[in-house]
Length: 211
Image (tube, rainbow, N blue to C red; front, top):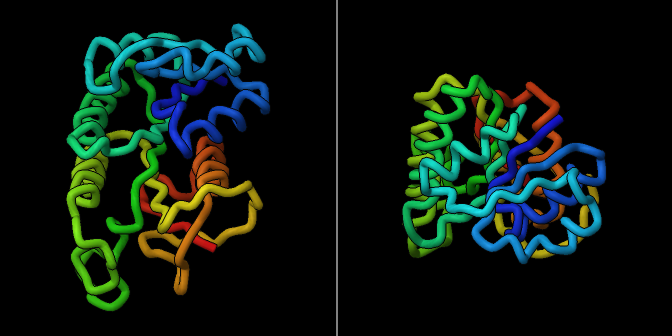
């Protein structure tokens, strides 16, 4: 299978790239700096297709999808701007044009539902400890765009993300952060995100993930 991966050089995306390549899949990575993936290109050869471009440019997204992706995973970060919402808008349009239905993105626990204040997102409630809600608001825009789309989407919503190894042992819950969850490593977040490619359990849903 061919996976289009966005954010392949990031803290979560790099693990997703490793897992997919190790499993023998072909990966197309849309990146601004191809040199950051040189070690993978040398190791995996034609199994890794690197497309140099910007995920917020319509022609670059269309070009990356043209490689015949069967699914898309986005592990992009907000960059303190509107990168995520601009990219998702482009993905929705181009994926629908090219009949690619499956999209998995990495979001934030802030856009899950609050347990203590029903009807509110966690980032709006007393459950959040963050002073700034800018990143959560950008992730919320992504959620709203996907919810209005015809894609088979899943948003993986990790809480605090320290670096760490893959254990494969964690808790997940639809729409909510698992009770008492306070962290989840980048490698385990990538593990669950990657597994959604082959699962339909959480289609059209946000999924909280934590230990």
